[in-house]
Amino acid sequence: MKHSLRIGRIAGIPILIHWTFLLLLGFIIYSQVLRGSSTAATLAAVGFVLVLFACVVLHELGHALTAKHFGFVTRKITLLPIGGIASLEQLPDSPRQELLVALAGPAVNVLIALGLYPFVSGAAFAVPDIGRLTTAQDFVSALFQLNLTLALFNLLPAFPMDGGRVLRALLSFWLDRLRATRFAAGLGKLMALAFVFFGLLSNPFLVLIGLFVYFGAHAEALSVEFNELLRDYTVRNAMMTNFLTLAPTDNVQAAADKLLAGSDQDLLVVDAERVVGVMPRQLILEALREKRQSAAVTEVMKRDFETVQVGDKLSQVFANAMQQSNAFYPVLENNRLQGIIDLNNLTEFVAIRAALSA
Figure 1 (cartoon, rainbow, N blue to C red):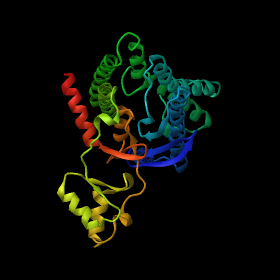
Figure 2: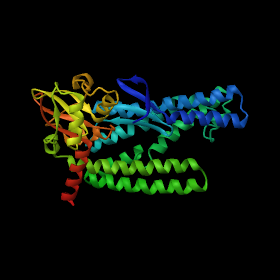
Figure 3: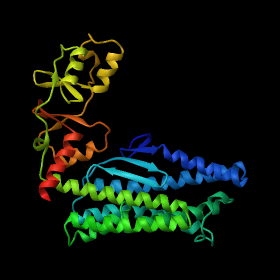
Figure 4: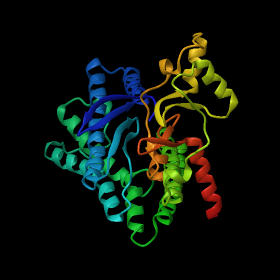
């Protein structure tokens, strides 16, 4: 996810925090100032939010480590103001595996709550006010209740919450994955509209949750639609074989001329069928602004770039490309250039397959 700051790594998984999370902390501090709270109360409220989000990280690690048990890799965990996201490279196709991965997160929150229960006060099930955590017992009681709330909320049968994945996994024992996803996503959208409706009447925060659920359900449905359309294809089926290249001896002006000569936005620098660099449009323009027209492309080109193989699954390449702002991959076979693939021709391939399947 864009505009996220990496704050650490746990079990080999990068932990990122989205910049909007800082808005949440700012809102907590602002609310405490408006209430006239003391510095100690304000720090306690901020500390509570940080501890609560540590529980969110553990929740996402529950998903990630269970997925790892089944052989699936988690690229990162990102913290947002309304929770966290564990970005798996690939979701399990097996309903049983998806069910266990989905349940692992809420199970972590339940275990945390059980661990805290012996230390909570008698008012553990009252609505917590994080602005008035006057004692350690108040702190523990609020943390206990909110972990239970996280577990129950995440089990609502709506994407992108865990309950939506649980529902899809259960339906997938009888239906194909696409139909199960459509049903779960449709239910998620209905639930999202209910959140928005009641939020407009009572609590604006519910509107935010409703919008998050609605677009999350929509994105999940699209993702599975795309995966189904691309399931039986490899990179070879979608790669472009008609593209422009540069030689290591070419200069920046030659690269600019080739930009004008075709529709390519990224050019490859190729030496004896081997890709040695990439010249994105932005690098060419920057070099021109610096009056480096005569500089060799090897002085400007990007040497660190991703590649894919002709036999790679197209669904996986598409999923990776969707995570990048300008996905562009040289396609190799036995280390020799065979073609290129980018997000534009991936989406074109998806559109063609959708039209043919319709």
